[in-house]
Structures are given as structure tokens and as C-alpha cells.
Image 1 (cartoon, rainbow, N blue to C red):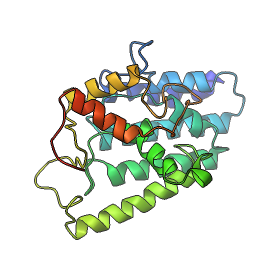
Image 2 (image 1 turned 60 degrees about the horizontal axis):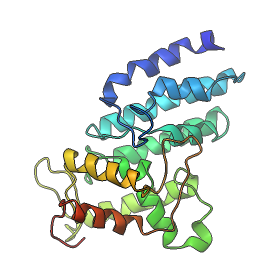
Image 3 (image 1 turned 30 degrees about the vertical axis):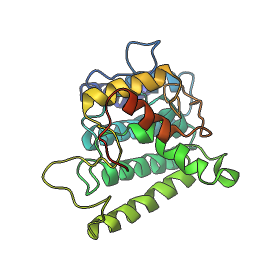
Image 4 (image 1 turned 45 degrees about the vertical axis):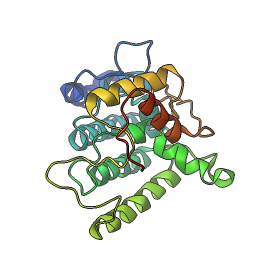
Amino acid sequence: MSGLLDDVLARLESLTPLLGPCASLDASRPRALLPVELATRLLEGCSEVERARAFAWSLGDVVRALADDFPDNIFWDLDHLAWRMWHAGGPREISSFAHRVMGLCRGFGNKSELRFRYAHDFLYGYDWARWVASEPQTRAGIGPFDVAFFDYLEGRLQTLTELISRDDARYGRLEGKDFRNPFTFRREPREEEHLHRVLAQADLIPVKAWLFEGERRWDLPFTDLRAETAQRLGFSRGASP
């Protein structure tokens, strides 16, 4: 099998420099798994060549989109995202999964009107946990990389874009090269990294994205807890969201 995948694995390996230090929120490892390492582990023992090729190629597409649209991203635990994509189904379903993630990257990232700086809230489940908590009876069984949540994010993207077009008080037009920050705390790289390491140490990350099966929780007010932790660390912007 490995010989049949050499070209797509080489393509994944070529993406490594895009991820910088490739930091992880898992304190037990020195860095996140590289894309080629994720593919190698997930494809071990697989005999489905076309599915394996579709996965490795799609993983590369997703990694490139994340790096392109969130070039300042710090934490790169893609284990659960990759695992979920591998289990999306056959080649067609895997490709569809990847294209939806790529579309979300382009819609929320630094080349969009929204211009969010990091993919952390998506990868580590902050957006997902808040969504599930608002209607747990029908959403508790839906994961952060399931189709139903992608549907929500795509709808949310449209809503926010419309707010920006009206120059909404919270989601208005940005000036220059500013990144969007509707939160009550600063999200410059130094603060962002320190805050999320503290949250990980306190077990306050909604989705443990560094695990293939991605242990996940929604039943704590993770958004509020993060803001409170940021305030305690002195990162507050002193404004209400």
C-alpha cells in the first residue's frame, strides 16, 4: 500500500513548513502530529487504495486551506478532524467533507470580510459547544465536524456577512488589516497561546482535538470560562462582547 501512496504522502510532507512550530495543546507531546504523520497512522493496515488516496489528498487540501486562511494559527492538533474525515465514508464523502471545511476556512479566515485570525475556536470546539448548549435536546449527539454543524456554520457565515454589510455595531466593517475580535479579551499571539495553554492545563477545552476520537464536552459554559480566565490573566479588553 505505501508505494501506491508515495506521491500523496510526499505532498503532505511538503506542507510541514506551513505550520511553523506546529504547537499542540496536549502537554504530553512536544508538538502536534504533522499531516503526513496523521495520514500514516490513520491509513495503517488499510487496503482501500482509492479511499486512502482520497483521504491523503483531501487532508492536504484542508491543511493548505487552514494555513492559507489562518496563517497566524498557533495550535495544530488536527487529529480529530483527520479522524472524522477518514470516517466520513468513501472517496466522494471524504472529498465533500474536505471541501466544506475549506469553504469555512475561506469564509471565516483572513481573506474574508470576517477576518478571524485563528482556527482555534473551530478546531477545539468553542463554537460547537456554544451551539450544542443552546439546544442540547436535539444537538447533544452532533459532533464538531458533523454535517449538521457544518450546516449551522455556513448559515452563521451568511448571517455575519449580512451584518457586516449593514456595518453592525458588533460585526461592522474592519479598517485596514485589522483582525476581527468580538471577544472581551485580547487575542494577540502571545496572549492567545498562553491563555489556551492555561485552559488546557485546567481541562477547559471543549474538544480534545489531539485525540483521534476527540473527547468532547459541551455542558460547561466554555466561552464564559475562557473569558474569565483571560481576565484573570490580565488579557481583558475591558469591553462587553
